[in-house]
Image 1: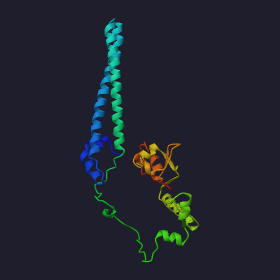
Image 2: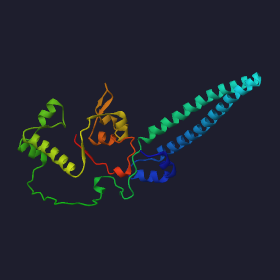
Image 3: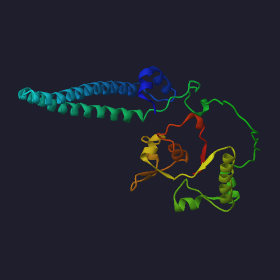
Image 4: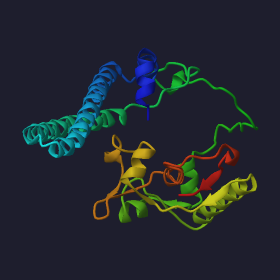
Length: 260
């Protein structure tokens, strides 16, 4: 998530970079800047009010000791009025902070300067390629036909028990899935990664931390009873292991791998 510091110090650059993602940011950025000005102004006024309350409160005891009861009563009244004003001001401050947060979470991260502008996948650039790229014969079958030919997947079973898009792997298809999972996890482990087996549901805070919430809420399965969300990939819970954690540089890189 972008910080207020980045937005305030690089407003035009932020707007320009977000345009690469086809995100029209000018209005929302201007709203954030205006709300932040209100927030800072409210904070300054609140600090001043609380300081004055503190000074007046301290003076009341001294005035009473000196027998200046009338002046002490005036000071008490001023403290009371300032407290009410500070409550109103603090409410406005919290409202501005909340509005800023609501806007910040819907702004995408900035793309790197090297990212080209484009409207579709056809505009992507190939940075590098490696390995032996297979040359398929003209009569090569697509994966869905291979699955049918070798009886690896039953799509009709998937539709029956769940719905479209939920295939049922069977026989050699099931064994292939399990073998591939183990193959990749074992290779990651051999490369120095620590394997994690995370829960398949996360709380809303975790969803916000990795960007699934709030704008992708309609695309996630939600367990209303416990207010938990089904993860899209294991990346979400694994990343959140380090949410709000400051990592010591000497412990970097942190290398985790997981399957979901």
